[in-house]
Image (cartoon, rainbow, N blue to C red; front, side, top):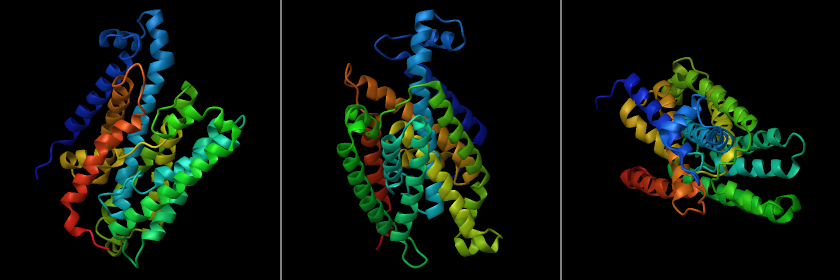
Length: 335
């Protein structure tokens, strides 16, 4: 298949993301036209609209973009690492493991609460990758059916732990509604400081991920072939898994469990930019960011004045997408 030129595709994705951000920022109880949103972002807006945009809406919208970029990039990394087109932080239980760590962080959090939550979410994500991978491994192979089963089982187990923590700790029960909304995929960005920390984590992880893209290309040929190319296979796998866990933890710490972004965005852009991971990662991150911004915007308006968790929208879109992938390749999946 003939691939589209990379730079125009990347430029188009940037424009789509910027347009999504402007539209999403303007939607709310007080509608703000796009031109006034742009003027406000450029520093010449109305003071009352500036307060609404900069203090309330923009942090949330940018948080949604970070979540989408992180989950899409994590999906690319896990698909390349496991050589499996259905690998995704949500499907494999990585997001569920991160949510356990994040909820434990909420339980033990004190003055350093915001820093504890993503740190423990990272630990949970790493442990979940190791556990699911070990459970699914059969000799030198990782069959897709056992991988999916291991992910489902681990997600159920992690969900039980989260529920136990929620009902057994008074600190969480006092804000149970907000915690549940967050766990179901609600973007929870309260301050610009929180957003800045999450943005720094995602930016660093994405930058490192792009530098290991060529290792993923080599691993796609098989571990033996990668070793003959001079790659330390085990060290590369550990590094890639760590980066994917960090991206997942950053997303879960501000938006809970958001389903299927790591499937939808990578598969959509792979058709256009090709399989080379150094090109695929930035494109998937931009596509994932735009998708989650749109999903969060729809979640805010579809049942207004009430609000759906954004994870509901991503699940409604991603579920049929996941089934379509299973149906397309069903003949290749064997125990």
